[in-house]
Image (tube, rainbow, N blue to C red):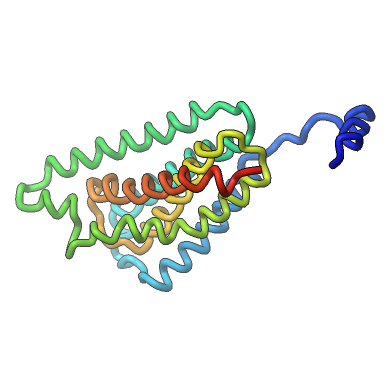
Length: 213
């Protein structure tokens, strides 16, 4: 739009800017991309044993990653709007992590000494591949988050990129929870969070390029 056209539009009452719904602007794209990541994860990695879902372990993983995805997704949405505060969604994400960390520490400390290493590292060295799998499944979600942010007006590009990456990582971890056979809360809070953090760091590095107006 040329300057003269903008002035003319404002002079004739363009009206208030439309209010953005966080669910419509960010939630729906992330949910759709998470479903795609889940389908890909199940196709490539396979599903966790169905019997696991009769225990609390997978529900714990889904609650942790789902709540993080919600909080970080809201933070990413706020970062896409100028001057919108990030404090409460980041506090929510931090609270979710602290609760999960406390549960993980309790599980680890109460495990028999011979099983404490397995509670952290998983079986057959699965800790080595956990974070990379989370990052891989986060890729379509990150693309959706970036596309959603480009429809908004982010001014804090590195922060927006980091939050988009973190939300994508949490969604990727949510999808991976359906494939992961590990059940220890200590394992989840360390290695799932490592994958989410790596996604956030990658988003921060790419944000100023991908989100530039």
